Amino acid sequence: MILAIDIGNSNIVMGCADGKRILFRERASTNQSATDLEYAATIKLALDMHGINKEYIDGAIISSVVPSVTNSLKRAVKKIIGVNAKVVGPGIKTGLKIVIDNPAQLGSDLVVDAVAGVNEYPVPLIIIDMGTATTLSVIGNSGEYLGGMIVPGLSVSHDSLISRTAQLPKIAFEPPRRLIGRNTVECLKSGLLYGNACMIDGLIERICDELGQKCTVIATGGIAELLVPLCKSDIILDDDLLLKGLTIIYEKNE
Picture 1 (tube, one colour):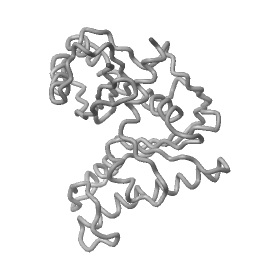
Picture 2 (cartoon, rainbow, N blue to C red; picture 1 turned 180 degrees about the vertical axis):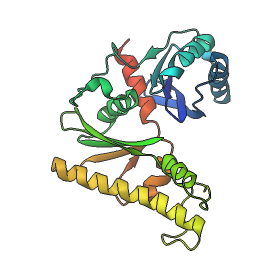
Picture 3 (cartoon, rainbow, N blue to C red; picture 1 turned 90 degrees about the vertical axis):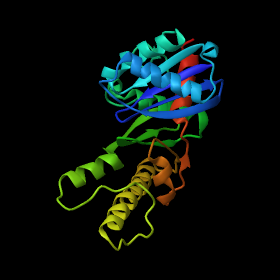
Picture 4 (spheres, rainbow, N blue to C red; picture 1 turned 135 degrees about the vertical axis):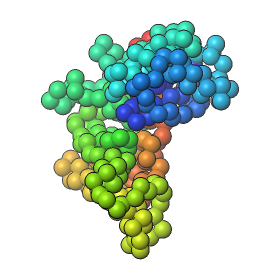
C-alpha cells in the first residue's frame, strides 16, 4: 500500500493506493506555517478516518508546487509511517516525454496528471486541473507533453473581483439557478461559473483546432465537480487523477 500526497497552493490532496485501487482521497488546507507535527496529525486523522492501518503502508510519494511545505510533509510522513517519501522532481523516473522549451519549468503536479492521463486514457489528451490556477495540459499522439495554458482559477478570480469592488459580496460556489441573474449574488454566480465554463469550452475547441483533431478531455481538481456539468464539451471527471499518477511514478522508481 502506498501513501500519495500532492501539495498544491491551496490544498493538499492525500490518499492511499493498493495497486491500481485508490482506497481514499482527502483534502486539507495548505498552510506554509504548519509544523511537522501538525501535518503528521492531519495524515494520521485521514488514515484513522478511513480505517487504514499504517503498518500496511510500504512507501510514500509526494509531488509539490509549494517548496516551503515539501520538507515538512516529508518529515510528517516519516513520523507517522516511518518511511522516507519519494519526491517527484529531478532524478525521479516518470516515463513522460516533455517537449516544451524548458522541461524543468513544468510543475510536478502537471507531470503527475500527464503520467496518469497517458496511462488511463486514449491520446491525444487535454488535461484540465482546476485549482488555485486552472491549467490545461496538452498531450500528443505519442504521449508527449506538448505544452498548455495557465489561467486564474475560479477562487482567485472571485477573490480578486470582490477585493477591488466596494459593493460586491463574497458568494458560495454552487450551481446558478439560471443563466441570467436577477440580483447581485445570482449575477456573480452566473458570471463566474458560466464564464469559467465557457472559457474552458472555448479553449478546448481552439486546442483541437490547432492540433487538427479531437482530443480526450479529462478534468480534475477541487472545483472540477462543480464546473464540468456547466460545460458543453464532453469532459471526463477524474478526481483521483493525481493519486493515480503518483502511484504509477512510485512504481517506476521501485
